[in-house]
Structures are given as structure tokens and as C-alpha cells.
Length: 177
Image 1: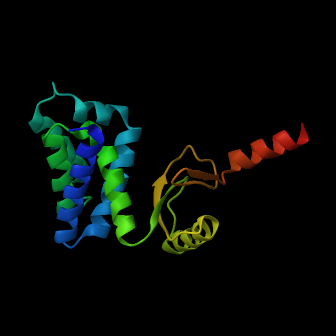
Image 2: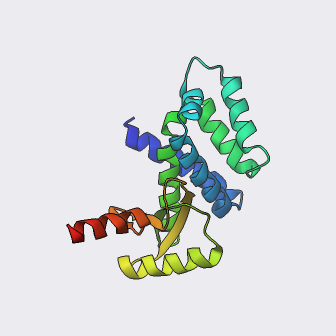
């Protein structure tokens, strides 16, 4: 089975479990945050993807990270993927699940990086603004990224909108040179 087909298969299976359990929105959001954490933490990724690390230890790490911070469905889904040795594919699987969940609502996903968490009102206003900019219904997924010095970076499909202070300073610098 090709990697894309395998990733789609796992994403669809996880999606269906979350949907049947009646917690798709919550699980989708928790999985999205977990995937971004996994991508940004080399040590965590190393432990969860290393076949030499006993399965019990890898599952223990998942339980320690998600146990009381995520829904039981989210913890079970991540544990399942880690247990079958597919932790390396987890971010891609989750991204496909998030895309499918958005498509079910006739929306596209905007991956937003911000230095601070956004309020619900800020998320709604951002979704509306991105919707106007892209001409699509947008579902905003926020990742808190301390390297963003101010403002946000939003990715909607292949479109990147960089509204960070750093970007504006670079534009200003280029304009005065």
C-alpha cells in the first residue's frame, strides 16, 4: 500500500471513530495540537518513533502527555497509532483527518501560528477575514508559537499570509533601502 493511501486509510479510520463517539470537534482539535507538539519536539518524536523503545514505554509517554489533558478518545487514537508503529506518520494522518473534518463542513483549514493563544472572538474574526481573503469558509486551527514575535502567520492551503511584526519590519527595511 502506498504511503498516501495508508495515511488516508488511518485518517479515515480515526475520523470515523471520533465521529461515532460524538466528539469529532474536540478530538480533531486535540489531535491537531498533539501533531504540532510532536513536530516541534525532537525528543518526543524520537521516543515515539524509535522501534528500539519498548511499546509499553511509548504508550506510557502518550498516557503521561495526554492522560488528563485530552479526551479518552484522543488518547486512545494516539495510543493506537503509536502502538502499531506509525507514530512517524501521525502528523500527516492528523492533518488529513483535520482536512476531512473541515471538508465535511464545507470548509478549508487555516493553520495559524501566533505568539499567544487567541480568544474565541479573535478566532471568529480571523476566520471571517481569512474567508474574505480566500473566498472560502475557513476553520482556524491555532498553534501557539513563541518564535512569532507579534501578529500571526496563517496558511490556507498553499497560501501563506504573514502578518507578523518581523515580516512588516522586513518589508519596511526593503522599502527604505
